[in-house]
Image 1 (spheres, rainbow, N blue to C red):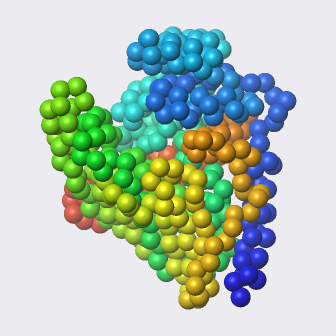
Image 2: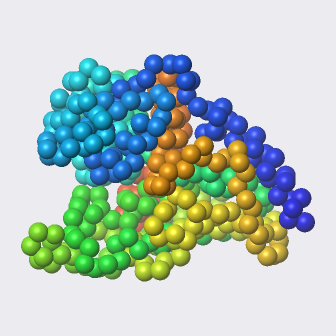
Length: 395
């Protein structure tokens, strides 16, 4: 029975793919290139620069790092013509029409304000800011200056996830009864990993900002908005060594999060996030409904993009893998799995710039993810459940 059941879902899924981030959604090839500056050279050098250089409509023309020597080294190694440690110089450079911002989250708001006020389009890493107030102000500034902001919510663009979304849209599970999300990683499980901004709550550190920002975006995308939220956050590793002195310094950012959402349709959604789980199960979503079960998961602790598989079961039958159709696949897979979905994010950003109009996922979705992160902290601090304002009804 699963075979016939699956065919119905795939038929609709393929139709969705043709209007999604596949060939039909590619930015026009004949249009002029957009000059882009990359601000931040950690994730920026590993993912943003190669992704932008691979896209047919973007050209990396400048790079920023707070260390002038480092900025020039990155520019020289990547074939970029201009480098600076001053953001004002980057924004004044005539060839720069748009900016990708890949600094740590504590720097996002001030730098993004400067970028937007200079009239530059912005591709913004997540979490977009450290508070929903900051995020909403960036959204307002973008509207005033008529620039496009696109957050890097890359899970929307991974082939298996697009397949999973298509199957959900076909009603493959029927009426949802329970959603269970586990993202159990080991990236910070070693207590000897050095203390830095990630260890500090006030700087936007912690698992909630790092992976919870993605989680809240894709919950909204796949299942709709939340109505209520409750949460418990913990810090399992309370001290880490200073990289320079070896002195143990206090950690006050979360590394484990247990979050309970009630969605607007009354479905319960249980979320467990961890950055300190040795041999954790990886990243999984399980959706249980009255017609069946749908699962997506990736057990890898080293590549959080490639390796996702989709499984389905009809009313208690054994779960079976449902291969992701070719129409969803990346045209090219890179050694660093994050590059291919980032190129699709860039494509969405370019399409928004061309159209002069934001479309999802845009800053509205960034604001909403930040709202849910803020409410998570408040729910944990107050040991209570909170009502979630609607996506378009936030004051």
